[in-house]
Amino acid sequence: MSKRRHKVHLFLMLLLAFGGLGGVIATDTSPRLGLDLEGGTSVILTATSNEEITEEVLNRTVSIIRQRIDALGVAEPEVSRSGDNILVQLPGVDDEQAALDVIGTTAQLTFRQVKRVVPPEAKKVPQVTELKDSSVNQEEVVYPSIQTGEEGVLYVLEPARLTGEAIRRAEAIPPSATTGQTGWSVSLEFTGDAEDEWQDFTSELACLRDEGEQIKSQVAIVLDGEVQSAAGMSDPSGGTSGVLCGEGIDGGTSITVSGEKEARSLALVLKTGALPITLEQSEVRKISPTLGSDSLQAGLTAGSIGLALVFLYMILYYRGLGLVAWAGLAVFSAINYTVLSLLGESAGLSLSLAGVAGVIVSIGVTADSYIVAFERLKDEIREGKSLRTAVDRGMVRSFKTILVADFVTGSAAVILFFLAVGPVRGFALTLGLATFIDVIIAYYFTRPLVTVMARSRFFADTRFIGIRDALGVKAS
Image 1: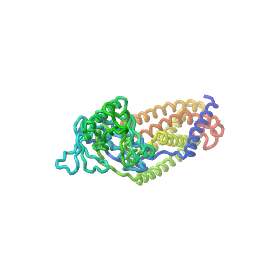
Image 2: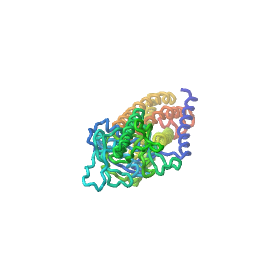
Image 3: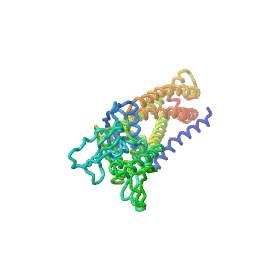
Image 4: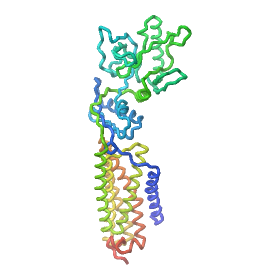
């Protein structure tokens, strides 16, 4: 490889490392902190459904919860399975209760015909149906009403005609003087087949209204075992618009709620779909960042002391080559920080204490790469090679050794990432990224830098810092 190409590689690596570092600093971009460093909320959700809990059901539940949290804008939540439980970690969440309500809401939505209404003063009150999941969709149920002015009212409802799976779009609608809407609501649109079913359903209810069945002509919208609304079919008599028997409602419907927060939360859970199982919060913990920050500070202090000792050892033992290690570690640190910052900004990657440990371990891996390279150069010198020949052959052979060593470390990190859960995955990810960066630096920075220095009279022959003295070669 020509000297010019070596210099081009060095320039591009320095531009990539410190140009990227300058870019993230200028844009005020930094690595996101995880739950243990920033603080937040940790919750364990336990299934209470009577339905069979399979691996497929749990995976689907995890996926839906992750979609809901992403829609809330929480930075890199950790959603993972632990047996039949689901662990959710929310770092830096602003409204803890709102987030917990959203992730724990089953969002089992059904549209049912009202069979009868039981007032709170009734002598014979039916037992409220405890089950709220899809297992009772084809059964008659009894659910309480949460409508204003209907405290204590129970609704006896027919089997569900439509479920939340029929929802194509859900949108929070604010009050509007134009439409005469005085409060917040959630507008619902159905899928193609469900629109036909909705039209048939409301047509039947309109016919019941014409027959004088005012109660049975009501459609109850039920969410997680609570009647959100139970509206009858409006009468078109007298020239007003209404629902005609035989025609029904061609389109969607809406659910009236008490405020903006409730409307947006309901729209969110309906858009992401219902959870296939019912969950309860078996454990909720508020995590303070104080302990994590103290541990991080202690780790950084220990790492700084260790790094300083490594720097001192490298410069005393390898002399001018020690400067190569210094420069390489600086480039490595700049690229690593840039990558973690960009991943935090674009992909929401958060850095936990375990991730910091992976970074610290990777610094040791990188330092080992330089020792491997420099010791290989010494072996070449002992075999009688000239300085230039030793550098040309030694750097090629040492890179092969570094590549094999980093492949083993990287493979372990990949396996650990896919098999582990929680903070261990953060450790594996940062270690794997750093190992890949180490390979790039070894080929495009360390190798050309040592080659260029070996061809420079100053770095090759200068007393004490010269490469010849470091490798035990007498200057000619």
